[in-house]
Length: 314
Image 1 (cartoon, one colour):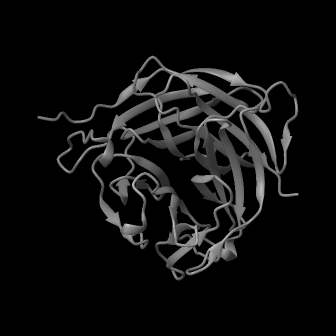
Image 2 (cartoon, rainbow, N blue to C red):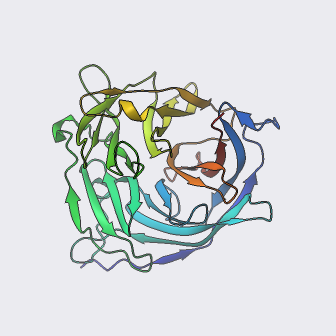
């Protein structure tokens, strides 16, 4: 008989990343300014596979999901200048079914996207495609409260290319705080990426223009109503690539093709890995921050990274 999920308390070792571009003291990369980063490990074998995260308090407490079927919670520790120094109070807990038993099967707990509002976490799952709501309880996460209609026809979602992005629009913008979902690489007949506004006055399916060989791994709305997307590429010859693209908010409408400018690209000459999670938040001094986290796939050849940037609006 399966056992209930225990909350594991992990010790995370972290090393600072002082240069984003390897061998260069340059800090400005397009619209983004590198503000610090971490490389992390743990002796606990469950640490890693970090797919998505959101801050519960700007720049400090966070919640996340791993694509191995775990929740994780923690706090970003900082030095006197505000630069990140490590993850503290870090816990992990396996996802459970309606009976409170650990689910375990990868195909049923491949959590990839996460959004949080009013004490409810909305999670996007691949393979067994669904979008589910959970009540946030860091001391003991329970089974989902309900599944949410994601509008995109299920047969259009590719097996391992489902919803990597779940995010809430700005409450005072044109989408009035609606939840928006974007798939990683589920393409329509024109080669564009399926997405949907799953609630609110503009409810409906739209697509995002696919540019090059990049796939979408996360997204977050900016204060002006635009959607910032995190994108990743991979090839044997070039390794991994990272891209941040700003999608115009007014192009996110049912039946429309959403697109916008590329803000930054990085390759293996930069401190990146398989970047999968992102959040946007305000620093105490008013700076608009973008935080990224990587999924190491529990591979000895990959790393768990946390990166921070200031997004300049000039």
